[in-house]
Image (cartoon, rainbow, N blue to C red; front, side, top):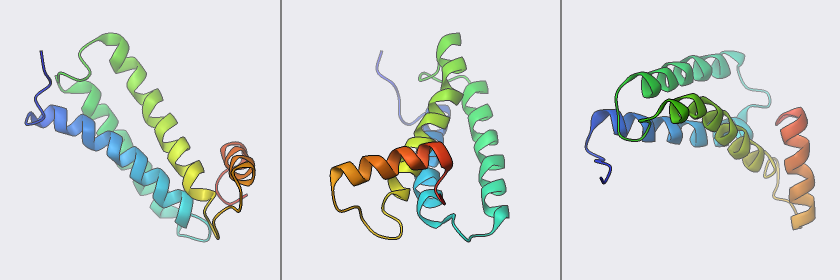
Length: 113
């Protein structure tokens, strides 16, 4: 059965994944020297959206396994997008090896390392 994008619960799941990716990009680029309450507000809203996505009945997260895996996927998507974005701050890497080195450093130590 195809997934109905028009269902509000399905849209909530897609929006939550977009929040993970865009939040990671934002904090990868702009978290160094920013206000601490920004990250706190983000994680509170992320928690609400993840809980809502898992709680409301939808066609995307329709098994117990997918509901248990969803918060892990959210965190992995946030970390990956944050690490990719942080490699371009303050300037773009000059080579793929420099990109990978900066990516791994960001994964291990955070975007302001």
